[in-house]
Image 1 (cartoon, one colour):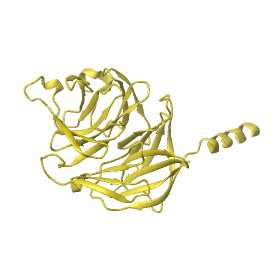
Image 2: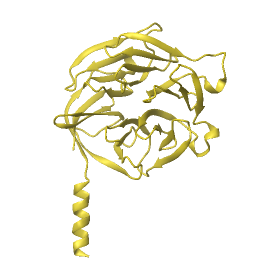
Image 3: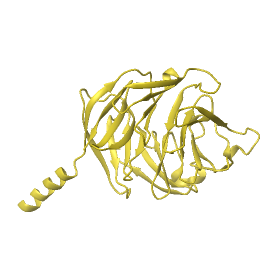
Length: 289
């Protein structure tokens, strides 16, 4: 029994995960999302200021684009930004009911809005989040209708899912989505207190719950396939293993207790794993180990 107890302690230490804050950036107004590109640039959807802020990995602001409006390069409450592609960057322009597409230098390319003359099931309104698969399919999270709309590589709406026809996979109050390995789509749902998992055809796979979850919001997937979830109400950062079998909490070593963990992003560099956490109106930059 004594040896078994020692083994348990060693295992707990071995798998302990910690985020250690190194700096903070406080130049935002109700930011909803943070993302990091492969070249180490950090993008913040500064929702309250209707702009996108671009920083280097140390937190120095390089550029801002946007401002309130309806034209290209303008936003009305941008809710998410996705930069997982080597070519394009996508912004979920929430109140303008569209997705704006930019090149890697954030030069405007195009925007995508719904076709209101088409099938209601594949229309979208309040765009809360977006992501692109390796097949160049665009997935749009419609917060108002609690559904996901899939736009194929030809720019055509293909299907929607996450509604009542998804059964146990029916979304209640979805916040953010992201792409995971093995052709999986992840969605955080604040009211369901869960992470929903679908395949790219819209088939519901499973829902992950944890009793400590109160309002899961932000979402990120690392190169290794680990899934990170911020909980804006519980003030907890969760980690899900690539096999979707375990949910763990991450110890946060910060200068003060988090009060509104909104989103998370990861960057792997020569020194290990950097992590970026949106907490209220601040961006926390640190190391994960």
